[in-house]
Amino acid sequence: MVEQEGGGGGSGGISEEEAAQYDRQIRLWGLEAQRRLRASRVLLVGMKGLGAEVAKNLILAGVKGLTMLDHQRVSQEDTRAQFLIPVGSLGRNRAEASLERAQNLNPMVDVKADLENIENKAEDFFTQFDAVCLTCCSRCVMVKVDQICHKNGIKFFTGDIFGYYGYMFANLGAHEFVEEKTKVTKASQGVEDGPDTKKAKLDSTETTMVKKRLVFCQLKEALAVDWSSEKAKAALKRTAPDYFLLQVLLKFRTDKGRDPLPESYAEDSERLLQIRNEVLDSLGVGADLLPDDFVRCTALAAVRCRGWDRDSRPGVQHAVQSQLGEYLPLAGDHCPRWVLLASHV
Image (cartoon, rainbow, N blue to C red):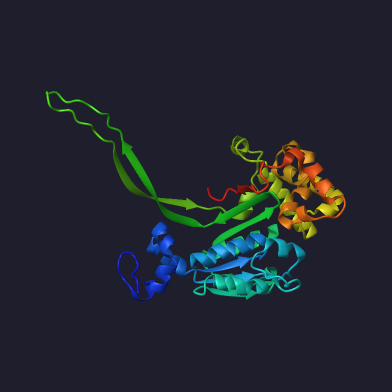
């Protein structure tokens, strides 16, 4: 048994097997942080491409348990974007199909699959977890679960990908942490009086640990900022348009029950424009913040996530290439643009 930092042992220790398994990360963030990870139970909702990546990282990090919750079935899109799902799983439940490969990543983590719809879960279901992470959820579901987590002191994370665009939000409540501060005292080289004294003075460094505290806001507050207020207007110049585009996309998902698709481009682009006007008006900003062409291309910009770039149907490739044009957020094909929603005050 390897004792935790600061002494002690017993149930707080880490076994020799675990110490060998997590050696590199223990060197990075310390034994105490690994012990806390080892005691954490996490709920992950949504086992599409992003969910699979989150699951892989949590399992390899060595949490105590991970519950993967998803009521949807494996689609053709999932076979292209979700590496935990084996070939031939079309039609199976996504969480169930991901279970075997996920567990094989780290046998020391208790990995489970929950096949129910998150919308049917009662509040007490979430209290068994230390952290909850949502992907592929509608705005109303994210807001509801965030409120439950905030009320019960559970760490809350949510994020998603819309083609080249993505976002993440964290609500850690009243979060205390320690930050390392290094102070460098400059000392210039000098020559002392005397025939045989010439000494170089070296810079000295002093490292101190500073305790900090952040109070995180809830998701509902982060999405409902009144941008017409004087304080918000000053921050608007520093706020990426992506923040507002993601609000439009989230409302589209809530209204339609799906994301924009290339095959329904004409219908979806017009609906996106309507939603753009509604959302920006409610937030107190002008519609010119998201130009018409910028919004119209969003339905096509999602193709990279869904494997549509490999679609050989007549017209699909041409439509994708001609419509995206200058509106790609970054030059590279594999450089998505992420937005960190304001999550603390």
